[in-house]
Amino acid sequence: MLLVLALLVTGFACWQVRVPLDGAVRAGGVAGGAMLLAGALAVCLVLGAALAFERHAALLRRPPGPEWLALPLEPVRVLAHLRGVLTSVGTHVLPTEVAVPYVDDCFGEDGTTLADTKAIERLERLGRELVRMLVLLRGG
Picture 1 (cartoon, rainbow, N blue to C red):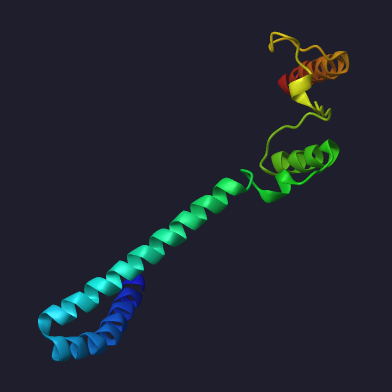
Picture 2 (picture 1 turned 90 degrees about the vertical axis):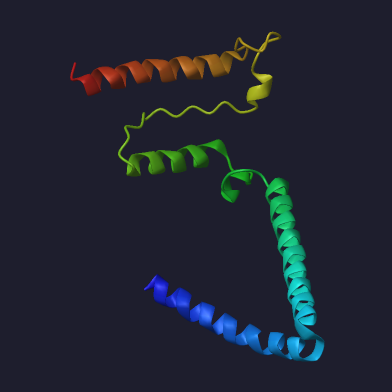
């Protein structure tokens, strides 16, 4: 089916291009037709490059990932959405959800130890819940 469609499109393009090229060849000779064809290809090349450049620049301007992730959503809504997505693909989701807002400010001077006591408590509670769920999944 695609081959038939490709042949039809190619035939239509050849028919549409043949008439202007034939007129250019009759008016200016083979060199005139070649110049017209080269000019048309150059214009298409410039327009295609401009379109590709603009698309690349647009991708660099917007944040990566889905646009709804860039919106200022509260962490609870994002976690609830991610829980639904993960459950729909058949993964086990812990009932405990932990959000660590302003994660850059939660770490100490060395950047490797967590300094925020509330975040530490939430992550420890998540760890305990993870161990409890793994024991239940194992059948213990």
